[in-house]
Image 1 (cartoon, one colour):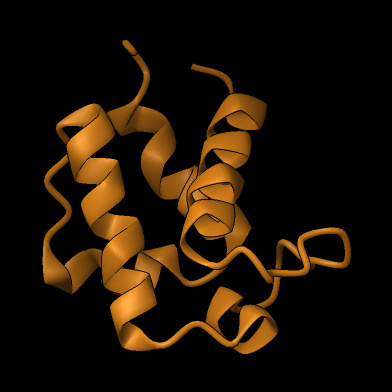
Image 2 (image 1 turned 180 degrees about the horizontal axis):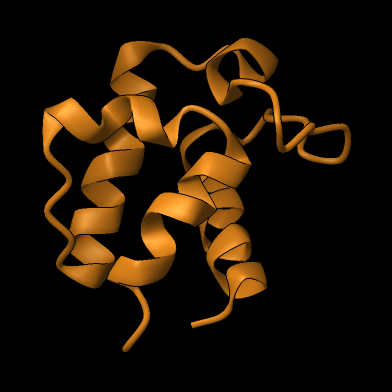
Length: 83
């Protein structure tokens, strides 16, 4: 899976969770929670959706690596390499 495909997946999941999310002005280097006003339950929903769709186990200790869109792609790329 390419980096762009992973980025699109993360954006799609966020849009499913928060239909009001303003994705057009999203800065991939800034924390998603700050830009999109995601609360901790929204964040967990994103993690759970990744688990459901791709059978990914994301340990709680790794959550900080999912802070920005770029860091999400960096973290997920090796895990989704063979998908």
